[in-house]
Length: 81
Image (tube, rainbow, N blue to C red; front, side):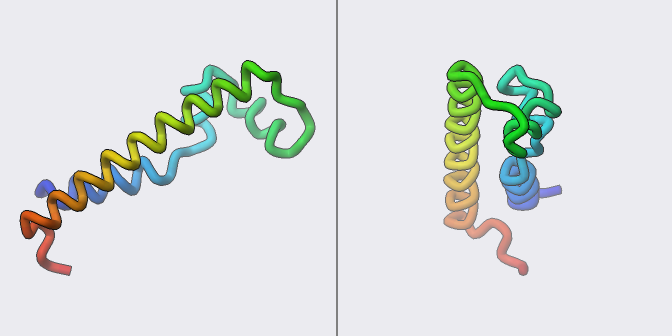
């Protein structure tokens, strides 16, 4: 797999962050996260802060990956459709 393909694969993987992965990164169970989403459970201020922190980390990661994709495009990487 060449660099352009690897960058696309990494970007797609990051863009589709699973509930389970977000929960793990925020030190929550995926079940708790789903219950918050359904409104069956109210998140504490600490939970809200942890989720916000992880989402900000995700945004930074996506920004970095987008930059890498643009840089690769500027080099002529991935010329074939």
